[in-house]
Image 1 (cartoon, rainbow, N blue to C red):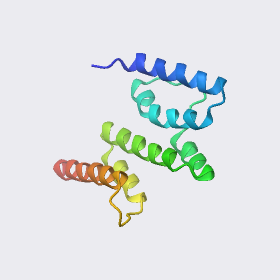
Image 2: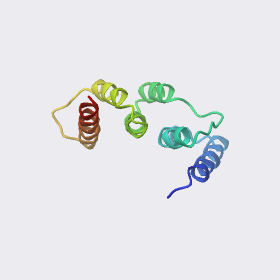
Image 3: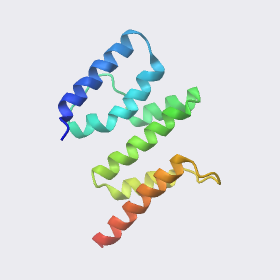
Image 4: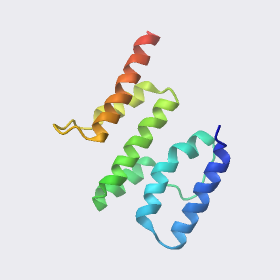
Amino acid sequence: SVNLKALSNHFASSLKQQIKYRQNTTLYLTMAAAGSTIHVSGRNIDGVKSYDELHDIGHKTHNHLLIWQCFISQLSLHFYMRNYLAAITLSKTLKPSQQKRVLEIIRGFYEGIACLSLARDT
C-alpha cells in the first residue's frame, strides 16, 4: 500500500524545487503526472495548474509529451474515480491515427474497460 499523503508531499517538494530553479518543462510534466495523485489524496497544493491549463501550455509550446501526460493522467483519474462516462468522453477527443502508438493502445484499453463497466451497470 502507498501512503498518498507522503507521495503528495514528495511531489510538493519536487514542485517547489522546480519552481525555484525555473525548470518549467519538468515542472509542467510533474504537475500533469502528480495531478491524479494529488486529487486522490484530497490535498490541495498551491500553484499546481489544472489539466486544462497544462494542456493549453502543451499546445502553445508544442510539447507533445506534456499533452500526452495530461491526457493519460486525466483518463486514469476518471477511471480510478469510476467516472466511466467522463473517461469515454475524454477518450473520444483523441483523434485516431493509422499508426498504433502507445497512446492509441492505452486510450483503447481505458475506453474499452470503461464501456464494459458501463454496460455491466445497465
